[in-house]
Amino acid sequence: MPSESLKSIVCQWSSNSDQDIQTKVKAGVKKVAGILLRRIPKKGKNPGHYWIEVVHEDENQTDDFIEQARIKKLKEQDITTSPIKPCTKPNGFRESYGWYPEKGGLSAVNLMNLLYSDARIISADGYLNGDCEARKKEDKKLDLTYQRDREAGRKKKNNELSSRPFDPHQNGRLNPNKIIFSTNPHLLPNDVRTVAQVLTEIRKFAQNFNGEWSWNGDGFDETNCHTFLFLLLAKCNLADPLCIGVDADPHFNDYYKSLKNRKKIDDEKFVERKELMEKLLNLSKYKQSQY
Image (cartoon, rainbow, N blue to C red):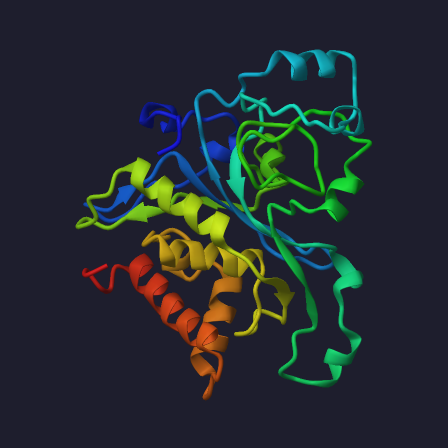
């Protein structure tokens, strides 16, 4: 495990949106209190976003050079010159992981695909935490605070803004009206893993995830922030009883239905995803004790 101690992962509530998480689940099922599943569902023109956060006690510790840069009101473009000085402290950025397209909105729309029912309507290169040059360029004139919206987060540890990887939506915890739904993942009674072991699996999954970002109306063949979170939970054997387990996630319900109702799937990737979504649903509803 990385240098953070197990004690540093004990959840310390830092906002109303953190405190609102429900805690009633069946006896014997263990809540992983220091990990948060964040959801802003798609609504109208707002594409929404799903991501996962890890709460650390020390996340507000700040590097001296970042503190001085903030006092001087420097911008990202003032510190991201070569060679980049890596951070050794979190600087307020919360460890978090989500999946993004290189460019959002209409720039990723493939108009030709609108003519074919099985083609993905929106497709672009995908990046963990939106950590790509096109997005980072949009943030160059932003100040160095962790409290504001950003286009790009960071994929790797000890980057120029924080010692931890972070999703650009990680500041949502500071606005109780921004995050629509939050839950904790849970371990089933026969799961003896420690929090440290769970975190190792989450980080490995996130860092190894690759490929496209695509949207097809919650279709079986899409890959985006929703499917990233669902696949992470399934691969890491984590239940979501207070959302997926009670059919409260419309994106999961539609995505699962699309996979389940697909009579023929030729791509092995989507065959595996169908099995993983079945597994995640069973985990979250406690249907199969072998997981």
